[in-house]
Image: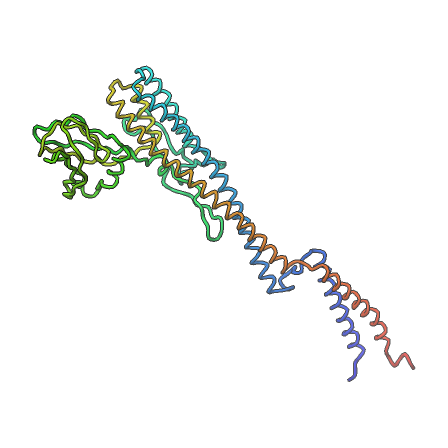
Length: 407
């Protein structure tokens, strides 16, 4: 086959250009440290690199979310610790006020200090995070969670937020609650459960009817109070010929419990203490009061007002019982939330470590696809350089192969 002079030139130029192109690619890989600098270098590998880069970006964002979550939870834990300490101090003062050893002046002084603790607790409940958001206000984070209106004739401590709770995404499959609404944590605190005498048979005298064991009565009321059928909240104590008092639910006609009875001698049943002058066949009726809810600062406010203004010892005793029960229930909710924060911090730490492992794996996979193998690339560059030099050296000799050189 004849090969023309133009074909020789074209073929050698193409060979030289191809060698130069390959050398340029190899040199770029050596200088950038990346084997894939554009999708055309390796379309399949480039697609994998894009996916791995997106995964790494997500992991980086998750780690930033994790840091933010841990900071918020640690701040909340510090706030709740402060609230717990303040309320515990108030509880100690309340017990002192009800000890019987305090004069009216001492009780007023305690009431004043409890009012100061109330203000301190409200300030802690209105704590703000680094962004200026009120932590316990739910989604209404630009508004203080609680406000105090001492002149109000009704509720004096008002919750201004809502029940919203924020979630923070820590990984593709894990989201953790970052806040809790003050409505759930501080405002919806179970008040003291009570009962009321509704009647008794002729000749029966009720000397006293009180709650002797609050925890036992709370359990009884919680298990049996019927918000749907009020008649099921009615009970009757009947004196039996056997010398016992029998407690019956008159709504369901169910016998609840039977205890020993002696007229004029106190007896306790389901946490309630009764002292009756009664004989066989006499009855006393009572009903469970509707459960109420209050808030920690409202409980402190009510008691401070009674201690500083009331002169009725009975009112003070009742208020102290209500306050102690409300504070205990509130402290229990605070303790549960602190435990929850600890659990969420543990989850955040575990997810953080897992994300670090995933990040290392993704970086390794991306590096294996994208990064330059310097030993291989250097050897390839030397081979390409040799080929290019050979092409440049032989091109002039090939172009001189002409019959005109021998005429």
